[in-house]
Amino acid sequence: MVEADVAEYEHTDRFSDGGTQVATLPAPVLTYDPEFPDEFEVRIQTIRNEMKLVAVIEFVSPSNKDREEARQKFVSKCLGYLQIGIGLVIVDTITNRHANFHNELLGLTSRRRLTRLADTPTYVASYRPYGFGTVESLDVWPYSLAVGQPISAVPMPLKDGPELMLDLESTYMQALADQNL
Image (cartoon, rainbow, N blue to C red; front, side):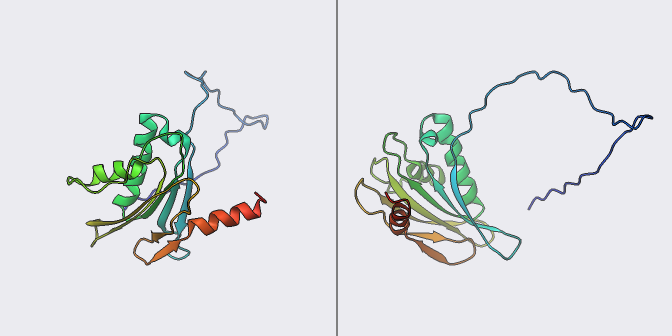
């Protein structure tokens, strides 16, 4: 476990006339407009134990699928959650770009050829890592999605806790009704 302590101290050097000394910054070496990938993530934390992260729901965005570098970053983030025992749900409803993060996760976490989802761009998958101190096993619930068909309810495993059922279809229908769509 790694922790960082950060402290802030007020420090001012005053001129004899009462003014505050201001640092002069050198000119920047580079100025540019950064491109940050879209991130749609829901973090589930406990209200006890200092807001400990227990599960994450990752919603895939178009920018997660558009370049190899973005795809690798997304998969690495998901692997990081699983490696420390955080329950994970990936929801991918992006139809115009093909990349299947579930299949990539299976390929990176197992030497065996595991059953993968059909080459469909849309799916929802849930992952429960567990073990004794370290992650030794991974339970997986993958479901292919089809446009116009209901979204499957999936388990949402909580770290060191129970699994909840995540009813995505009801949530989606309620959001549509709330927005009058």
